[in-house]
Image (cartoon, rainbow, N blue to C red; front, side, top):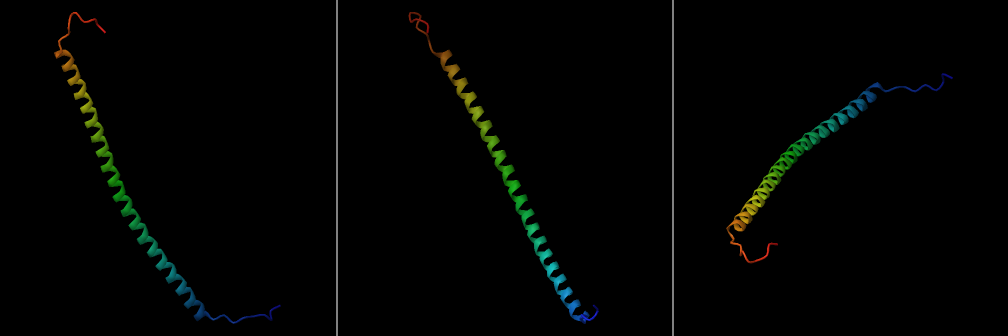
Length: 90
């Protein structure tokens, strides 16, 4: 039962553990940098979306104002037009 003993090389195990830890730290740092970059992109895109929303709202308000002006012009034209009293009402 106890005949299958292996000798453990603590120095080699420590070196392997240090390498594995360094690799994990490097990967963590790379992922953190990627996350920061992604957050920056998200902030930029959010700002662009806000600008687009503002532009769409401004366009919608302009279109509504233009429609009101067209209605007002049509009303003024109708009021300015003389009606022929002999013509039947429609």
